[in-house]
Length: 244
Length: 263
Image (tube, rainbow over all chains, first blue to last red; front, top):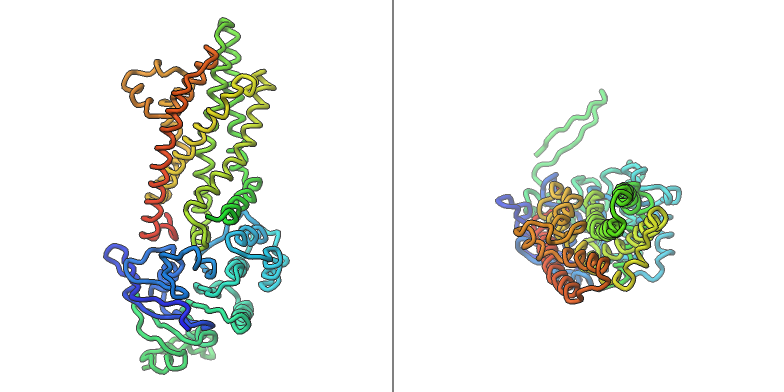
């Protein structure tokens, strides 16, 4: 069952077209990768899916209801995390999660905050102000915030971009485990094919605002004509070789 | 409309308030300093003038009541600017929070802080200048305050709209705009003291009626109710226009991407 349908979505800023007539869907329990280079239109798409950016054209439907007409109802069940956003920096981790919890209908508010603090290894940081945290720690708080309302759809904009490899791995495994347990859907933007391959059930490849492929990571890897292979040679230098 | 979501935003600002030196100064520090400076000046002038003129009372009354306009406007606009500076607009507006709930939450946060400002000003003016504002104005206070609060919110909603439209370069308005409103509000002098052209402009400012009635009450012991009612109706009209302006600028910001990247 499709939980999110995007139809002919377009976003123009003056003469520049950031997102060009894209259509895709997200199934229940699916992790969909939105893959593409910087400036491809991934973040713009996420912003339109969150209702903070009005599309020039096209339609976004969650649970078969238009986002434009049912914003409050839909956003109760949707959340997001982005490497490019911040949380109020003078508030502590706990305060940020607490006030955010009031933005959503949650019965067990205190328990939820406590559980997320444990899940995202934030226990030592709860009394720290956001300005004191490293970028990796901020990302973990952002992710915890994204889980606060038991979302049915989670939009993650490069969620592991500022994390160290160990924490990235932990977060990837955590998200997959949570998805398997609660069957929510995720859109995961990245420009890292290896990550997308590990996490996503399906990948939409986007470039210059257009969808150029929509398939499983395995099939997509076979159909892409040009791939970049990173070779680590014995002298320690990283060299990129393009093969067709 | 959700009271819970409004509460969320009130909590957010109450968490911040005691931690931010600038915000504490805004609520308590600056009003205290202004009252001290002008209070002392007026005390000096009073001691050199005939006692029949209650200059200190008129001036301190004007000064304290004007603080309600300034602090209401600045604090409400700052609640929004805090979200801009923290790049937090996307977080709150990607939640079910509505524009109306956001505005109401800023008004409530503002009222909580203003209650502290009001208490401090009342105590300081009574302690230092033996000026009891509660006793002096009595029943008139709620009628004055509601009008002054409304004016403060109207101006702040306009400022927020301007920031949404023009970005950071408009943020200075948050502090400066009341200076533009003040001369036409006739806070410290009667309407008749203005040149005719300025009097004609002042008639469109609800605050000019409020301060005229404040002085009439002090000098004559009576008020012209219809003037206060007219000020209230003028405020209501402007409030509707300012909310419409905010809403329109908000939607423009959503369309042009300024809600997620305001600069």
